[in-house]
Length: 139
Image (cartoon, rainbow, N blue to C red):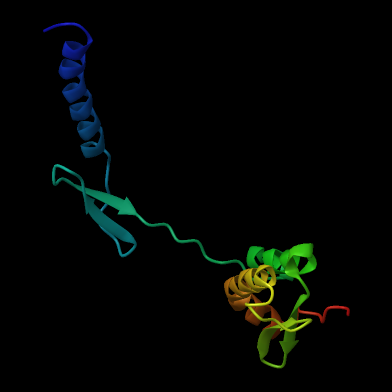
């Protein structure tokens, strides 16, 4: 047997060995609290470092991608009359006119999308409210 199949059989195992050697030669540090050891197919352990980034404090609602996404959605035509209501210690969505899934499935889907965006933005909304950085929307 010759040709291309023979070449692949010879060099493919060699490439795999070089790949495993490269992973094994990767310098690792002693395992710290933020590191995890994972094993590959041949059982060799490899350290993976998990990097966590500290969240920067919010100075404006525009500093939060989640709040910005919610705001953009509620201002767009797809919102179908959905508004964010901010009261003393709560956030809710207001639907004008009222909402029923059996009468307007498209508006219902918009409401579900808005609700998901609200949940995503909730932590940042609470922080912004506590810092006094949320202003009421103009009617």
